[in-house]
Length: 469
Ligand code: GDG
Image (cartoon, rainbow, N blue to C red; front, side, top):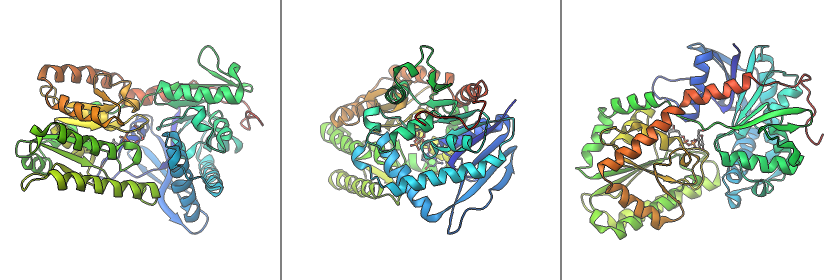
């Protein structure tokens, strides 16, 4: 059996206090099965050139972390990854801030990743690269003579060619994706978008009838691998945490009111401004609910150095303040808005306590919180999931109350429908969704991707000729 090498922008060593987030749980579950190596940035920036990786072994998994140069990191991470690729891939063209130096830094950091990783690769390895920060890494590894199977999985949406063309280096980005042997997307939509790019770059004959893609003298696999969650672990975390002090204190403080919960990184793609608006419209349209519902929004800060994230934070503080100022009473606050982090298990306990889970991103690759909300519910008395039809998860979770997140009036009606839904309907919807989650859980996701990688035929000559070269 091959050794699995996972590569992601950021890795964090397992800590006792906090369970890692969704992507990290996925990578760890894959690595723990095969034993393997996780390579990435360790979280430190330095003034000088990065040295050799720091290597730690924990529970059979090897972690190799590198430092990155401070000035380059800013341009690569805050700049190209999060001010160019992230907004564009989420169809927020107006939030994109392009500067050529950012792209230079992005290329340079990917070269550094390749140079530091290549010497660690052994003849048994299969290499799985994660997410938009590292698209050029595969090509760079091939240039350094790496001949093992290379896979890439995109956690966020892939835009249609008409949106992708806004990126000055879009052809190079598509070319870089074709240097992998396996390219994975969250949904059929993303795969179709990738096909639209390949068709433009290589001509329609590149898309073969069996779904494979012919690029020069190579054939690559581009497929859909929707990420799942560890259902059993979320269920037991949620059940256990429902007895924890912090969750009990929260439920006691509701004084019998209904609870609606949202959990999202503070990011403009998550649709929080529109969600706050929808909640305000709900309170206006259904005044019987005044004093009878609490909306708990947990939104840990992320990417605080990027301007768009500072702006969204201000907009949300104002919106929450407006609604609370207008509707709150001496013993009731309509929105509890928190910018702090919680341990994963506590979050699962809070999700379980909520009658309504509201997940309304304006665009999302998958959205694990939607899946976690469903898994965290009690089967006897489950809550209702309101889910954006623009989240990747909407495809699998068709039994959620689906909404268009921009249509705030419909979202306000959906909140009312969720609160008044019969127990029988709540159970039927929950059972249907849980079945889907169990069928495609995190283990199935990693197994399918690793199998595809193991079947891949990397090019004979590692210094492969790529399209348009
Ligand atoms: C990207 C894509 C795709 C949240 N707050 C805390 C915390 N979380 C956990 C959640 C969940 C994960 O973080 C967030 O995952 P999402 O999928 O909801 O969103 P992104 O961070 O944008 O993830 C997304 C995902 O990658 C995986 O492919 O689904 O579309 O954008 O697991 O529970 N965890 C802890 N404390 C918190 O305060 N410990």
